[in-house]
Amino acid sequence: MKVLVAVKRVVDYNVKVRVKSDHTGVDIANVKMSMNPFDEIAVEEATRLKEKGVVTEIIAVSCGPTQCQETLRTAMAIGADRGILVETSEELQPLAVAKLLKALVDKEQPGLVILGKQAIDDDCNQTGQMLAALADMPQATFASKVEVADGTAQVTREVDGGLETLSISLPAIITTDLRLNEPRYVTLPNIMKAKKKQLDVFKPEDLGVNVAPRIKTLKVVEPAKRSAGIKVPDVATLVDKLKNTAKVI
Ligand code: AMP
Image 1 (tube, protein in one colour):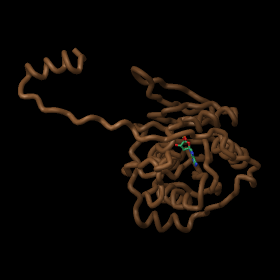
Image 2 (cartoon, protein in one colour):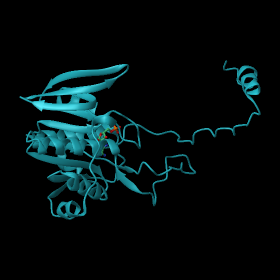
Image 3 (spheres, helix red, strand yellow):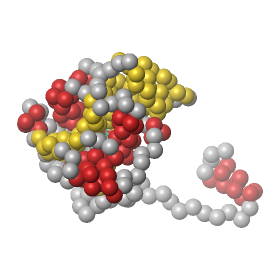
Image 4 (cartoon, helix red, strand yellow):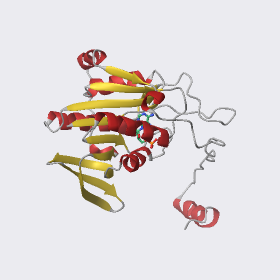
């Protein structure tokens, strides 16, 4: 069974992003970029399924500028067998990515597509769900455990107040939550091996997809600054402040 894994190149989670002075977005010039953390979990899960003998081939897909090739090489160093870059300099919104992935699903016919539950740059949490609708496939989102056997996947999901276990028939879409696994460290030999793996490049036009943005960002602003805290001399003053100043008790 083939698995398609979507990996997005995003601003590294350690970077403190700054809003551009014209409020059109965040400044990503000269900022460290990495694979979206939930997508690393997706590649790790696919790799573990391959190690268990459930999966035969892992294809990593990234959509975006040429530099996404680095993200694909990282996916291949973790365990993906080959990569596909859908190259475009256009700003990609979830619906456009879902349409590109749908075209690749038609082409590659994977038994499973694994995506992150959300990209940490846009926080959309939409692409997997849109792909499930476009490809007319069952979906299990926010997976914290995945077991694949006999043409079905048993997926445990983190829901309010507990865990829910679903059984979905393959081919299906799964999106990863934080506790699904802990991705392995990529080793130097695997980074070297990844450089030799196959990486195909397509343009959105090759897949017959129009990726023009359909949502316009009106304004991006920094969160309001928190006012400084104060020190109180004793518990009685603290209780008094909570009661009469903050009015929270
Ligand atoms: P989002 O809906 O933007 O929060 O993204 C959810 C997931 O969709 C991500 O974790 C990725 O697995 C996938 N995804 C979104 N954008 C891209 C992209 N440009 N290239 C590859 N995968 C993507």
